[in-house]
Image 1: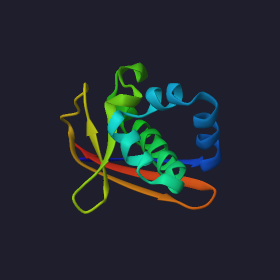
Image 2: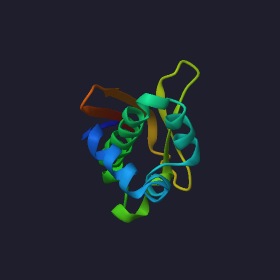
Image 3: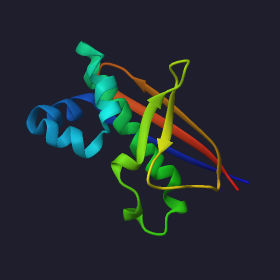
Image 4: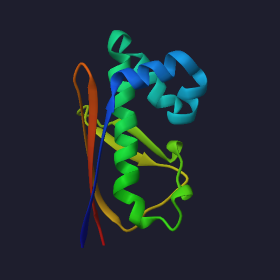
Length: 124
């Protein structure tokens, strides 16, 4: 058994600027339709949620990079950040499988300026 970890931090303002500058193009490259729907439902705080999901995806990529033969084997849409029945973030992988991952946990936090995410995976 091995523990993999990934962490990422992003300025909320960078995500906001990217969305304002590139609009749907940026959103559709990085986020799935479910993620966009969730973030947009947050109205005035949507940029915090977009930044949190961006950080979570980066943290996931960092944690699982050793499981990939090629870093281009995974794209932004292969890891979708959703909320479980208790509102906690979790990842659903699509188009890519990691049978060696036995457990996966994500934590996302944000404040006025930053969003941060940490991922821990237990693999065999």
